[in-house]
Length: 317
Ligand code: 8YV
Image (cartoon, rainbow, N blue to C red; front, side):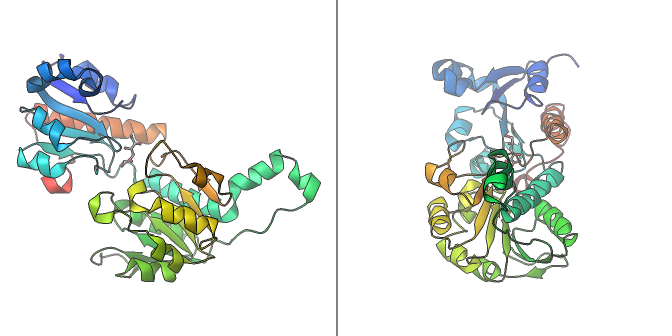
């Protein structure tokens, strides 16, 4: 297709599976609002699309600066960084990339649960550092198969996690605001869910509604044999409370893919031995990132060709 004369701004450094597609099709302004606000002010009235990711911020202020903005296409399922209310108020469509990343994020959640429980990174270091031969066997870990799993959030990814947990003979319970039609036990209160769980996996959207949902009380309820896994957003967990709970062994351990102030992870958290850390890699396989890039671009293309977008966020449906 010939390159169009439509101007698109990126809100963040885009994925190599998304950026080249946008660059080839549109007149692309790479984070111009950040790199050269003066030049951006001059071009802003021409911006009709914003391309972002799960981590990018698209504020009401930025939306207001682009009076002819029509669409914000997020490369990611989470869009808590986008001021959707401001977008809707201006008739701006917001799209994201659901479904294509369900398997990867669910795989990683199970991987972090197994890693934290069976101490896989610690085991690897134990062998590499020669401690096996020097000291003898490693301290014993915790069993996953047959244990009780609590899932905070039961959307598409939560269901993919639950499905995998069944193969480990785990019993699955979950919390959401209202029960879903899934064959798992609904527990209305997150503290009660934590109390009855050996493993608590967090996979709920970020944003104001879930900020610090996992707090000191929830961690105390999870208890000294419990393990927390977060593959949602850093904002869902009160990080200071988590560090305190890990340091004082209020919980047994954690597996974390997301953090409050990414890519910065507090030194205190990095110093805790019984925690497994990952740099926000939930969807980070080349197959899935390609599918996300194709879908994020297809949403832009559909919109500018006058067709309905493929995957609008729920608020824009
Ligand atoms: C990021 C994510 O979008 O889908 C989400 O919500 O957080 C991730 O998939 C991805 O890291 C791209 O930046």
